[in-house]
Length: 531
Image (cartoon, rainbow, N blue to C red):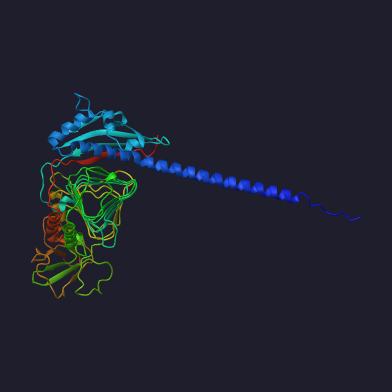
């Protein structure tokens, strides 16, 4: 008798196995998604907290500036000291009083202010500065309880006298490129000119987590300012902006200046703390358009920075022959006689003689694309894109590249303080020595007045270079060599000062009110790890 196979129940087992497998798979995927969500949330909270103490520091200094706004140093300094110290003790600040001025950041975290490392808190005042030393800000996020610390000395300073006219050395930065503040805290302590390139959407952009403080006497923004979500812009300068001020949700602008004028789109007032900027010629759009056009006409197609630096130098030797000086990489034989430009895209860095205070200043012609090291006490002429990652104290930058100037400051803040007049003059007299430059004896034309103070004699140096120095201001050519030696100051055109004067005239006149304070951070330190 033939037996039949029975498959009854097999389908049920298959369904159960499949269902179990799918349940395990779905549960695993759901768990992985949940853990990924938790991880991302924790990372976001941790990242937000990383900047909370920096936000609190800016919040504190902005409030301190507002306390002294509109008052000269003689009255503002005693008022500030009284506001943050206990009665009868003008040498020490009180942590609780300091913390009371941190108003915005305290909405996100619990903030405490105390002396750093157990040091005794103290106040140091001069006739035009007041410094609150060893200020340690500790923030604990209300969500997650993350803790971070930041420590800095905070100095508020007032100009000693009003100044109505500015020179090149009064500027920290003159640039035809965009300023892209990507990371960290950048403070511009001198005057500023920044132009939005014609094919770009903004002149200055402050990205999430970054801080830009413009505290010098004068800022001329030839274009639009963009502040991203999480970015912070602080203005204490007289500031003139030919474009708009766009502040995204989550971004913030602190303004302690009486004069911040713009000509573009109106910023969201709810995202501005302090004084509101004003629309230039609010009741006269035609006049406002003329104001913007005047900046455009002065800059032209090439830009302000371009017109301040000689791309074409001509000299005359003892017998009256005309010389063109080139600095070009590669083969020079194919250069046409009428194609005469000075390209300074090879880095040159040389120190001057000591100044009165014993320090030395440098001239840097052609800037490396990644300036990881500090550029202090320098006159910088550059036609290259740059990334700045270090301090720039007592330096003046003239940059005629038309792409982007990136600030990527992951650590200690960058303070861009301009040169002194003495330092600027010393840097201009540094001799720019070029190798394998071409001197073209056959150039057919010379435009009289192109370079107003050209020399009538070409002086020959000894091959040994024993006469190198910073006193002479003629053009030089080393004997038996194609090496040319030019004082760096001759790379700066006579039009440079005239352009600055015209910029200030268009903006509304130069000058700085002695009752406008600015902030300087020193001994700045941020803990790398949470407690």
